[in-house]
Image 1 (cartoon, rainbow, N blue to C red):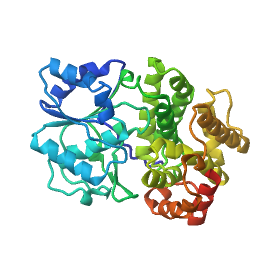
Image 2: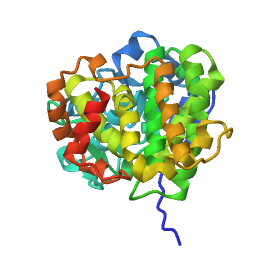
Image 3: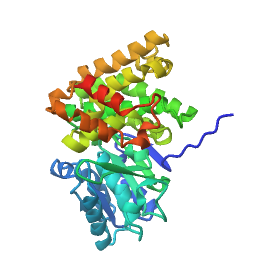
Image 4: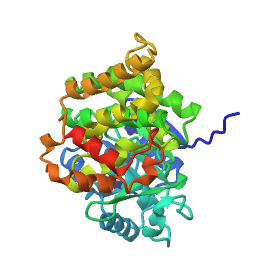
Length: 384
């Protein structure tokens, strides 16, 4: 008999225009003075008004923390928490990409806790409760709105994760209207990121389970059918909505069957060169898939029907090759860079990247094939 443990957000809403009902959700959760955690780009673009206007209309005045940056450092998290505490907020709304949502989760915990951030790193280290939490993603990528994980930059190039069910939000709201203005390159990179979540969840060595498998397959179906369309026609609300739902399903999948070597090798790229996370994943994805193929061929072949709209069924080793080719071609089709050299990464840095990738044992243990330091270096060389 299978042993399965599956957790996710308390409530998920996927509806075009759902943000207009956010005041009602705040009242249901007892939020009267929320802090909206977002980035300066969304404020400058006026998108923040899509959240503040319905709140103001219903008499809820929010305060805004808009200093979120990619790969948020510890100091930023602590500054944001102090901001929320000084203004005595009673709830948190995360609005943006993965970095904004990750910081929002931590603010919700830290604002009411005496526990230090450093003591929360790792799995299951969060003590106590949190403020009510609503998350609204503006990218179809990280799935952070339904994962119990926050990733924080802890040094110049290193990252650490806080992993706890306490970080799961009360409500995750997916509204495609919030993603319409996303530039094609970001749409492409975040979409590939979400597909990686589904692939790695399905091939996870330790916690693979029927629920995550089901979600991963449906996530790949939705995203493989819609990613190129939203890159080329960003105003297609139905395609945008399907991408959001696919990314959420992928997030639920990997929250319960964690990611592996693609992410482990992607993190040093982001930490050292500030390459966006989705793009970091796409740069190493085909090469990690080929590395894993001797062990995971049947699993990759089993995903082929999901990305081929059921037109191509499991073909064994041939199916594995077709799956890898599809993902490689998709990265090309959506216009993302294809190698590390294109990102101006010095070839002499590959050894350092391999060393740093090996520090991600929390992720590497999930990979279907064991990864040594030499393996990591070979993968970076093939990606160069």
